[in-house]
Length: 260
Image 1 (cartoon, rainbow, N blue to C red):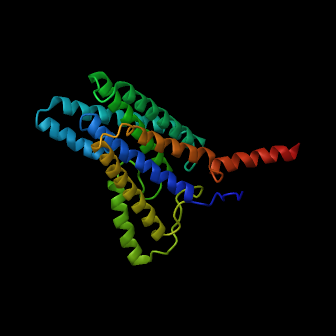
Image 2: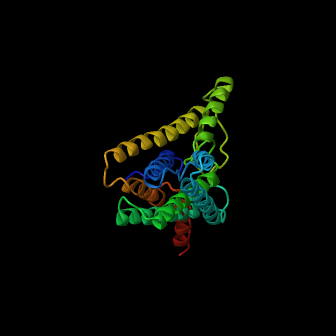
Image 3: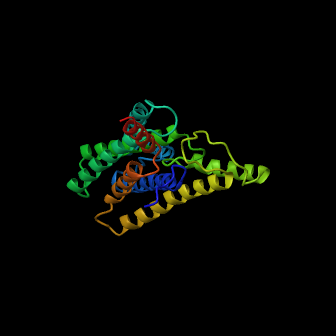
């Protein structure tokens, strides 16, 4: 079997796309299942909160507040985990994704156990858990400092696509760009960067479309979609042969063996 070079970006790009898909699916499921609230997109959630308050809809405003509080809590948890390391990749990133996976697993278990009709307590618990998972994911990707790529809220990604396009026309799309974090397999030029940004954006949107279609047709196993996606992400970052920190650990093991 051919060993994958740590310079390969395929696994990293697939991870980003799948994380965007997780956010897209959870946003649609939470909107339909959790009282018309978003748990990944806090910009839209803030708008819904304002509308609810303006219209005097107390229940809807409390849903949005729970999502905002949960997302903030998730960012704090994520930052507490990943800020233990320097910029770039480390096993703390894998740990953060594992925590997110565990929370989504718990969330899906609650949904299957409770069925379609959620009691008030379970509803708010579901909103908070879903938002915490998305907050953790947001903090994790933010820590990686991938230029113009965010997997939970896409306003910044769209803005970056426009700015990168203008820069490309002025300076050339094939001009190499300096990696902010050299250990990560980031795009090497503007054309590749814009391509990745567009793929992440389209993946989020297409997953939302697919999730909405499944919801419309009352697909019973729909809650499993974000869980399956995040489990695949976790498997990629744990078992990817080109994983930066795995390569580093293997190098240390080889050094120890050579000494003996």
